[in-house]
Length: 379
Image (cartoon, rainbow, N blue to C red; front, top):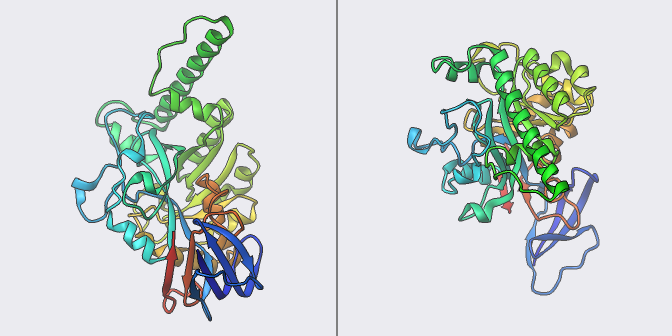
């Protein structure tokens, strides 16, 4: 058992508790409040004068998949052999010894969405994992939490020299072709179940796409420019799946239109703490996250680690707050909203009885990045 006492507890979803306590049993929050007795034999952390909150969550990263210190030898982000590779799984590439994970823990970041890259129109199955563990099996919270896709410059840049994709139309065409194949595969499966006939041969590329079409997991589509965002929405409407828009650099320009689409379950914003390195990010602004949040979208702020090092996620949220995003909403954007989009909000992202004890303790407000230090990260 672990007992945290005297802390300023920021639950994220149920307000702030002054001089509060948290009782942790078997890795879960057993009690939270102001009048909790200290159980006999419990390890006690005195958080007097400390800021206590749920662990920070990185909603879009390549932690473990693109190791930050070993260049090409540790880069397993993209299998650039064909435009659609839905059978690839991030958990087969994550290295728990990536030093980016150590940096995350030291910054109070306890979980992250770890994804294949954006070279392919359909890039593979992303996982949501803890940032601590000796093996991926110890780290994983949800081994397949979303399918990763990409529109815009990246697939064109990779596949134009190979004679496969030269236009945005081509990228959408590849996605549409794959979805139709998966839809037909599902129809054959259903017909076999109804008739008692032979099932179609198992297809490892189509099965994970079927999970998207059955709305078991969302498609998270890399789309910076507003026309790419609308193409992502158009495809989601056509095939009726849940969509999360990644990066969404120009999303603030059409925030109301995005928010009006029921298939869009949220957006991630970032990386913002970078140069405008390509044409499709020319219009990114710090105000974007706040504009989209106020439009009613579930909004998470991201680093896209290692594009921006993951430990600067609180700084990114602080700068979005400075640019007009409400402070509490900016905190939600790196905790509960990130957990929602990563498919694990029932387990982490807020301090509630029954949830897992992923907790960060700081000397002060995590947005006060120049003075605040991490006291403890509990995973």
